[in-house]
Length: 369
Image 1 (spheres, rainbow, N blue to C red):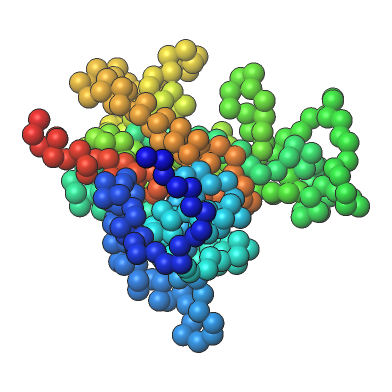
Image 2 (image 1 turned 180 degrees about the vertical axis):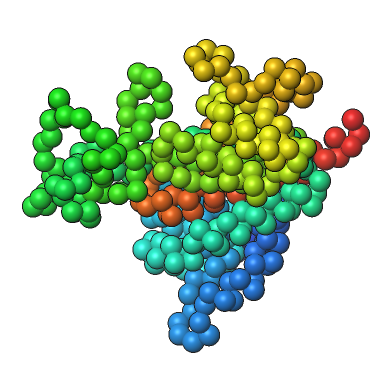
């Protein structure tokens, strides 16, 4: 029998949002973990808000919405608010009921930027790591480190002589479209030039023969058991940033007897000496093609764990791949080192939550194996 195409809308709904979301939906466990983390941060949130004045957007909802934007690669806050208006799954995750009005995109951005400082975001990231440690999912002995370039939200035309244009004018003398620029024969470097759009960005090339772009660098310290991110640093793009960030993160997390895997870019005498002085095994890929030779000794390279570290360290590329394609870290849409640091921390916190869901779902299977 043919069904009737009835166009009249129902006045009432007899199902709650909780009933509409499938019991086995991937976001259920992520939401459970996130709610626990946000509950533990209640005291921190309380310190940030006044007891008088108009109520703001609840910080818990701001953080859940920010995570959704990363999970589903929502390209803008305007589109995120549109999704929250009609997407019941998004409403359920954030904590809005079906009839509750969503916020204006500018109000959401203003409240979020005021809340998500680097300090608070790092606190949230650290609590995600603590949850993984609590479930026994992280190695406390073997780690890997690497860095990746994040393209800045600034055009090449904005990279101009420091004395020529004052910061903040966007490189436009009288407004309107960008002026035509001919770089032929001009030597441009970070010492003499700066971006008028984003002064913190630095001109950097990924490798020989690659084009130079205005960039930042994100650095991640990964544990080798399940590929979870332990620490994140965001820096300006310089030739020494990778090893400096590796030492900084290593001082926070590594102890004597641990191993640190890395690629050839980290095969530098100063870094290897510093790691060995602290009792950390430098399982760094040897750059034997360099005329200076490798800083990693033959004895370290002959250790049984060295080959394993070299094989496992490549998993960190999956972290960066997810962050750049899903988390939209390939080219940031914020300006300033502090704002890029917040985006990096939130992206890798989201990555850890996704990994945690998968690992916790696989636990019964791993227990039977």
